[in-house]
Image (cartoon, rainbow over all chains, first blue to last red; front, side):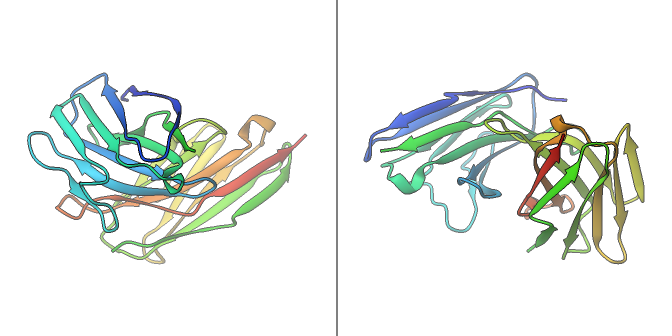
Length: 113
Length: 114
């Protein structure tokens, strides 16, 4: 299995500001992902965080709004830029462990006011 | 791309009864099907998974079945307990490749009544 730590776990942010979420894994993994889960909804993939290169974004998500870093095989960050109330969501870090098993962190619960 | 449908959206059962949640997928190339349990205020927790070369897998009170021909898979929870109350998500993962990603169902809110 993989143990995933996310920071912050929860935050209240002012409209127009940006927040960076950190994801740390206890072992080296090739694949790391960032998901968004809006209140009462399912999970939507934002992007795949690629080590050493630019992230791969899904339709509807852009780098200017959600810049991602992946400096090594155990760490990634997601920034939510210029936040609006519509960005209030749970942001989840996910990793693919050996054997294709996919694990999630506990999430970062953001409220934008 | 892959599309996963999940039913029912809500399910209430009496403690001790069984619960069944069903999912269908569209991409026959998908080969990995995990189930996640999400309790209030927590991230999704992997509870069981199945790969396309297996028809059934069981772990204590939880079992998953896969029908590749019909492209559907189901989660079975027996002897339900109040602590089983949560939202359950099914998902499907495609084969290795540039378009590989986990696609989720819409979730099932399971309530186990004491």
